[in-house]
Length: 195
Image (cartoon, rainbow, N blue to C red):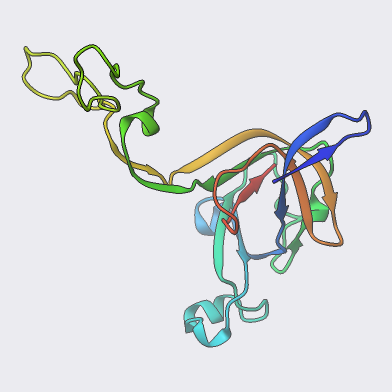
């Protein structure tokens, strides 16, 4: 993360994202595949580590570390997306509003104070070792724990989607964009950006 000053001198919290390039590896059509979608390949992988089926699928395009498929709506134009088309930072412009999805940082097994924001018990008045405990967890009558009760458990490593993220700056030479605010995940996390 960093900060970026706009023309009026206001400072914005910002995150620098490396964009692609991603290459269109397949265009799926409703008549042939049953639905419309665009498959893109990203990253690089040594050819010796790619299996034959994948090698045949992307024979003239190179070997990719991963693939992602994006469904195409009625308003989207499939004609502009041909196999081999490269999409990079030039596809974005400052002021664009995008949706960003990524897997958040994993935090391991956490208690209710960190995981759900519980306040814990009082530190005095006869209490002993109950500062970060969850407290009561349910009714006496049913004699069971209801589904969905907030308890300690694994935290993070969830797919998080941010909508309405504004692009502040585009650097086509470095293939980077700067978006407003923070993004889920650690450094190096694969981020999905859709318009």
